[in-house]
Image 1 (spheres, rainbow, N blue to C red):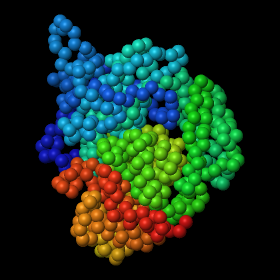
Image 2 (image 1 turned 120 degrees about the horizontal axis):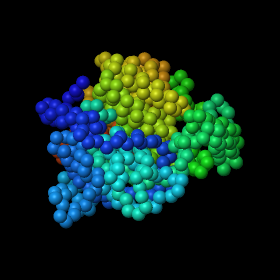
Image 3 (image 1 turned 45 degrees about the vertical axis):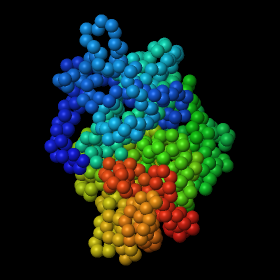
Image 4 (image 1 turned 180 degrees about the vertical axis):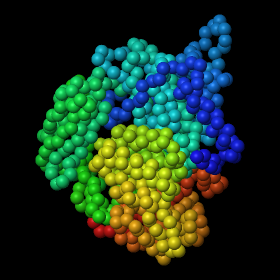
Length: 622
């Protein structure tokens, strides 16, 4: 199924698809005259940012390569002498070298390339990166290249040897480089391609900027020969004050023992590794303080397995549903939230620093939130760590967005891979209470089966959290109806609606009724409208702060009439870049639905929602 190319002429779209197909085939060595042996698949490390690391962040040499000439010959065959070799020009060479990373302009890592150079602002295609580092190998130690995120496809070589490739622009991965590093000087080369394709996840069209590059931190992580790659530590359900979970150890001997300890509670246990490398555990604790937005208590948890150990910060809480209620630690809660894109405040571009996270989530706290929807893809660990510390519940989302190729098994496999990486990396964050499978997908049988499969997989990976998705709603007159069959697969139903912006007028909300076909908790995952900060006028004048504020004034009473409503995350906290929003002088390639501008200016609607949240005039009593 070819989706419409909204930003390209049809002929250009088809031509790009044909070229892409050719490059993809040769890239994976299916028709190449020469191809390097396949590299091992990357691994997922839970809590990778808790490991001692050698940072590779900083300036990297970069070469823009729209034809992928550094990897392919004129006949689209993979080169044996590709740019990944990082060869240096030498006097007397028979053929001149046509690239030189040492002379190439620099790009900062972590960062997107779009906001670093004006010439790359709209660029989509491959860019090469190169960075030198020194290293001294250690006995009985394995070395991994950790990549926080690279959008969208990426390939990595160390000292000219391919170490891994990865697809997906918002999840971290780790490539073993033990066998290819040597004492002294080394180099890493990466090729990153953010070209959009029909069979990507997300697909061709999104309503956010397609930031390319090494958008999150890159580092080297040292691990022992047998090491902890995955672990899950959580509060047991059922009223018992106990901690349970499991630890997986790569290359551990069956029967090997590991320990789990919470020093502050004077509690610890040991467990034995089974044949599959996993060791389950369960032990009682006394005096445990539950994590909540009011008291976001975090405990140091130390896990030890042979020569490996890791200390994690974990908050202990339960999240579940009862009828139409959401229960946190066994008590009903209303989620007063806001949606957030990973757009950096002030400088714009991809958010990736502690300062970015503290600013964005600090604004959410100022708004009166106890909840944030991190849309429309997994966000950086810095955001999740900050949410843990600040006491903000989190909706974390897989980038299944709009109209994917839902009948394509390869696309399902890509969505499953990104879901596995999202949960595998971030499963111990107390803040995360909702795994979202998708946003605004069309109601088709193929779509429903696709996302039901993802929901089942998420439950198998993590049975301690709730499953949701942001659904579209339909209307009959002044009645809005939520009857999407996907609702059967969800614990909590999210829905998006834009009365007053994409349909009717703000006061239409006053006469709108709702019909809900599920006895489940509801979260209105998006509502709102656009306004340019500083643009004022009559409440009836679009794009003014007054119009946006008027939408909120009519929306909040309407939503309060929905008996099953248990939360909201209006769209959205801050303006963010989008290629779909070109209106000159107003949008200028920004989605202006933020309550705050990208430069930190709070709009009138911010105060309207803040008053409702802080006075608790929206939401049911808890």
